[in-house]
Image (cartoon, rainbow, N blue to C red):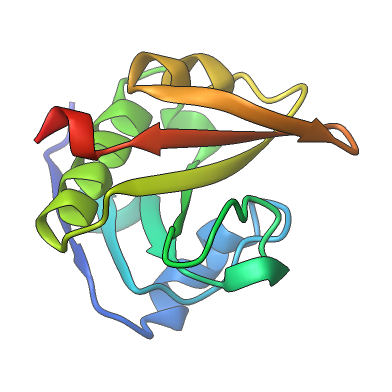
Length: 139
């Protein structure tokens, strides 16, 4: 097994983020905060936060950023999504966010991951669940 590193993404790091943003319908290719995972130096996954306001599919309210997670297919099922999502939720808490939201397609297996990490269903429309994690209760 190759060594894995998870490191912060800098705001505006579109070049590294773009391949992962392309994996998530409607995801922005830039971030306010985020993490990138590398195996043997190659990017294999990312989780990032972006407050895109009402234009975002996962919008639930002003000041609540949306979270996005993508893992290369060959690395899915290895716990990488859990590590990335947990880490980016910690970043959100440290920056003072009291909640984050996500939009997850009805057929996306990541629904279980988001549920395990405290997200609850707050809406459904056009084949997409809108999820919310209240970060204030886990400080």
